[in-house]
Amino acid sequence: MPTKPAPATDLAPDPVPQPAPQPATDAVEKRSTVRALLRLWPYVRPVRARLGTAAFVAILASCVGLVIPLVLKWMVDGPVADRDPAGVWLGALYLLLLGVAEALLFGLRRWMVARPLAGVEAGMRADLFRHLQRLPVAFHDRWASGQLLSRGTTDLMLLRMFLAFPLTFLLVNGVTILVGVGIMLVQDWTLGLVILGPAIPVMITCGIFEKKYSAVARRAQDQVGDLTTVVEESVLGVRIIKGFGRHRSQARAFYELSHTLRGTELRKARLLAAIWAVIVTLPEVAIGAALVVGAVQVADGSLSTGTLVAFLSTALALRWPVESIGFLLAMSQEAATATDRYFEVMDEEVETEGGAGDPASVRGGGKRGPAARGAAAGGLRFHDVRFRYPDAPPDSPPLLDRLDLHIRPGESMALVGATGSGKTTLTALVPRLHEVTSGRITLDGEDITALSREELRSMVAVAFEEPTLFSATVGENVLMGAGDGAGAEELGRALAVAQADFAHALPEGTGTQVGEQGLSLSGGQRQRLALARAVAGRPRFLVLDDPLSALDVHTEAAVEAALRQVLADTTALIVAHRPSTVLLADRVALLSDGRITAVGTHHELLRTSTEYAHLMSGLDGHDGHNGLDGHEVPGEGERR
Ligand SMILES: Nc1ncnc2c1ncn2[C@@H]1O[C@H](COP(=O)(O)OP(=O)(O)O)[C@@H](O)[C@H]1O
Ligand SMILES: [Mg+2]
Image 1 (spheres, rainbow, N blue to C red):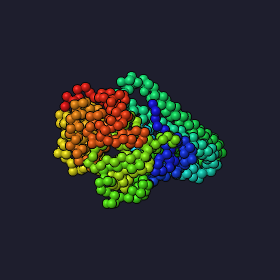
Image 2: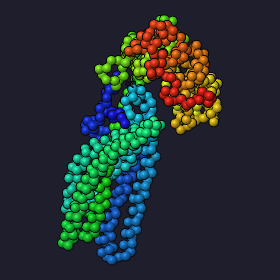
Image 3: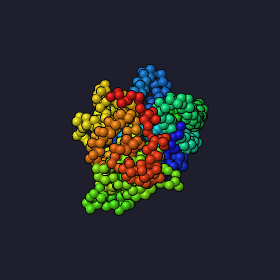
């Protein structure tokens, strides 16, 4: 299963995006964990007071814990030595109160951070989603959806966990260790130095660990993205997989990826195990040594038993703060990687708005103005358009080259061409789903790059061959194409034009849920709803990419009859394969080798262009004799 490579962090924000993103390993080595995590600050800023207070509470709780050994010392040297049971009970009461206070403070901290951090996570997720919606189609062509999905789920969860634990506890543990070591040094500085012995080797180990772990963490998170992609594709394409009996190979692809991920996770575990071994063993040895030295001193009489007890219980209390540093660092690394992955997407340039500053609008010198309008410049016009996909091989010729085409106001033009000649691409240029490489496209004389996206997309409506319905009602899906004020009347009209009246006969009429979680519709039904969506807003320009390909002959004829009325007062570009659809249009343009090689009526072109005659004869093999693409349910036309 092909997955797109994970894009690199350092893609230049170039108006012409560079092809073939590099794997991110280089970037990983150069980047610093702290710098990566600092990028979270804008999101953390609003909750900084809460987080700060919570950290303070945690430090307080930790220090309360450190008082316990001092009470022990007082008990051992005082009431225990004096055999005073009342004193012992009092000491026990103090210990109980201190323990309860520590527990309550830690609980308070958890309670304080839970809500704000859930808010931070939700805010970041909303930003990511908004950004994804605004990124150009070229970006989505390049990125595997699973990589985006895993960023929105796993990575953001890792970030929230980082803010909840490591961020606070690296600080809290640091302070606790400092205070604890201070107390121990004050108790007895020789024993203190013995305990401090392993500090330097532990720090060196942590440094080495961080570097190694960071690379593996990045690999693991990218692999989760690949895995997500496979799952997503397998679920969305489940019919194809079953139909072709591919579930075994699909399962193998999944198994291989998950096996690789398992290997990476095991490597993470091994690294963690190594650092734990060092972090746990060395202090343990130091405590043992301190115990021996201390016992000798107590025997000498140079140290009180209480002090030794206090000393050792302080050392034991510090065990957890020291030991936890290993996985706190690991979690921080994962969070830094997650931050990198998050901002890789957030740093991508969104679609440029029209008007000044847009590189495309400067190119052709296409100043808009009243002078440019009028019959000659009106309608939909392609001027010397050249286009190549940003991710096409750099030495390949442009897909569309020096293409000129003029669709007059109110005219409907059919676009005919062999499979792969670039018809779909050409239609996608009009609503600026892709940007022309050079040349201009004008609507009634106005360069589309001079219009805001909103203006442009309210003028132009599109329907694509592969109709997409969202998980919503039929009505919501169709009225998506209309303005805010549109209601039942507009819905009825649009459904009628698209011959989609079957919608009224659905279980809950136009309120029936469709899309992934709703009722499954046939290909022809979905196409008609997509067509209804395109005509719902009564657009001035209509761009239809083979919108009737999945319809049976009878339905197609009916849709065409109804479309004829709509086409009468719109300027339309319709990609067509069948003579019947072509006949709907006033004129036909033939797309061949990236250029418009002929324009005329259907009959003219049949006479003058052998290529056109060949395409229309249906001998080409690709053209849409119904049912070839397996979309249509037999008897579809009668089901209405
Ligand atoms: N996102 C893309 N990136 C690179 N090449 C693409 C992309 N989409 C389509 N192509 C290529 O552009 C060519 C024209 O595709 P298309 O416009 O869909 O043709 P048609 O609709 O005429 O069948 C095909 O060779 C196709 O492989
Ligand atoms: Mg196409």
